[in-house]
Amino acid sequence: MFNTKEIIENCLSSINSNIEKIKGTFASLSASQLNWKPAPKKWSIGKCIDHLVVSNNLYLTRIGNLLNIRYSSSENNFSYSQSFMGNMITKAVDPVNVKKAKTFKVFYPNESAFQKSILDEYIKSSEKFIEQVNNIRHLNLKKIKFSSPVNLLIKLNLGDPLIIIPKHDECHLNQAERLMKMETFPKG
Image (spheres, rainbow, N blue to C red):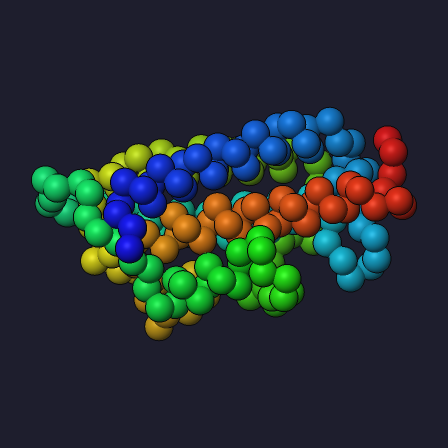
């Protein structure tokens, strides 16, 4: 069993690590490298990153809507456990999971060619997430519920995306790094 402080600190640390990976690993890539795919039906680095922006923004909207509701609380270190669905999603997107999961249509990345600005969009989205996480420190992350971006009937608790998003981001950033290591990846 975790507490909200641990969940929040782990989330912030992971998101900051993912931002640093974007800045350090992908910043020097050209537009052609961002758009290169090893096969027609495979994702490019740009598509991986855009998928993160699309999916994270859907969660950010839901969290933002919750922040507009006034919750009263003086305690800020509640015990925490994930919802059943949150736990299932976390397992599916965890970087250590070797099973490939199908992406829900609501999370599909754009089909257009990507420019280097996709990296800035990811950083901006991540910084907004950090801001929101800092704004929910006083809330009971287990008791506040919202609907999943995938289906209104799937209920998650407010702490679920604090675990899901960093793991999901890490999973796809690792996927993007693997593309860069392929022999056929363009060198410039």
